[in-house]
Length: 172
Length: 109
Image (cartoon, rainbow over all chains, first blue to last red; front, side, top):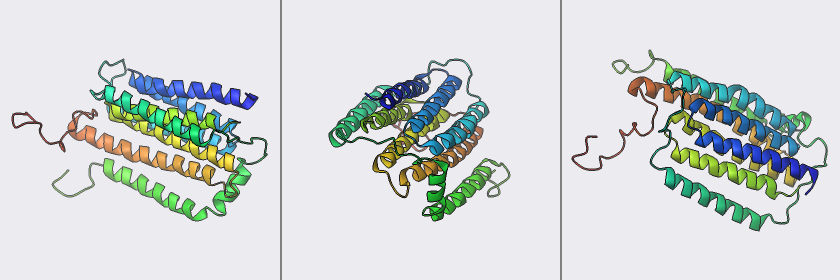
């Protein structure tokens, strides 16, 4: 095992553990905070993989915006703050079977396919803001613009769905 | 670094998210599980991008786009959850069963 493999394995274990606690926690606010740990750990994994810009954006958008939005959602729907016994549906045994089967299938296929694939992490600047920015505003500029339109549509859609005084008359 | 490390972590994240998606009762917790699924896919994209040394940096650019789309998805999803909560006073997916067929004729639903 090389040094980067050891670091990746450690951060990966933290990420997976936090994700597992996020989906099994009986307390909704704690589940959201474990999601912060899982997504922060994922940013660490990106750093080990030398994708620096993606790691920074991950922290900014996910931890800064998405989790705060989820916490707002929990508060607005008046989710109980304390621990609850009934956060899982009756589908739980089926869900465990499906998740374990999916994990087994994915790991088997990937071990068979990529047993001798090695990543070279020593090439400098592959995930730097300069490289990614150049690619984003060079070859990917059209998808980038479409994405900005999508974000605007989602923003307006969220406002239109949530406002009470928008919509057909008589269906308020 | 062996490529299998990111791939196995990604498979684990995906399975955990799948479990949460199927087993959770609260709608906001289901949205969190969707975030875990998207995170697993993003990790795969970055790992393959670094492995293949892509000239266009496709994996990392697509990861940035997935992050932006995830933010939009959470915003819209929470707006829908909020509207449902206003109309039904619940955010539990077991109670939102207007589209299911009644199990029997004597079923109170």
